[in-house]
Image (cartoon, rainbow, N blue to C red):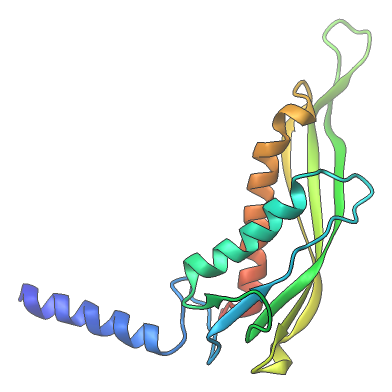
Length: 170
C-alpha cells in the first residue's frame, strides 16, 4: 500500500512538472527561460538599495517557484520596468493624552513599480502594468531604521503579485 501511494504521488508530481506548471499553480506554457532586467529607481525619493533588492526578489521568485532557467537576456518570458514610487505618508491619527494635540500612530511606506512583461511565446499574455504594495510602521520608528525590513517585505509581496499576474492560472 505504501509503495502504491508513493508511486501515485511521484506520478502526479511528474505529470505536473511536464506540463509547464509550477508549484504556485502558475503556467509557464512552453517557456524554458526567463530574463529580468535591472529595475532603475525613478521615484521622487530614491532609496539606494531598492533597485537591487526588488530586481533580485523578482528574479528569485521565478527561479524558486518555477522550472524556468534565468538567463541574462532574451528569455522566453521577459520583465523590464522602473520603480516609480517610494512614498511615506502618515496614517492613523491619534489624539494627545495631555490634551495638547495629537500625532500620528503609524506611517505607511508604499512602493510602486511599472512592469513590462513580454511573453515571446504567447504575445497575448504580455502586459504593462503598475504594481503597488505598502507596509505600515510605528510613527516613533525612524524610516532609516525600519527601511531594510520594510523594503524586503514589500518587494517580496510585489514579486508575488507580478508572478501571479504573469503566469498565474487562476
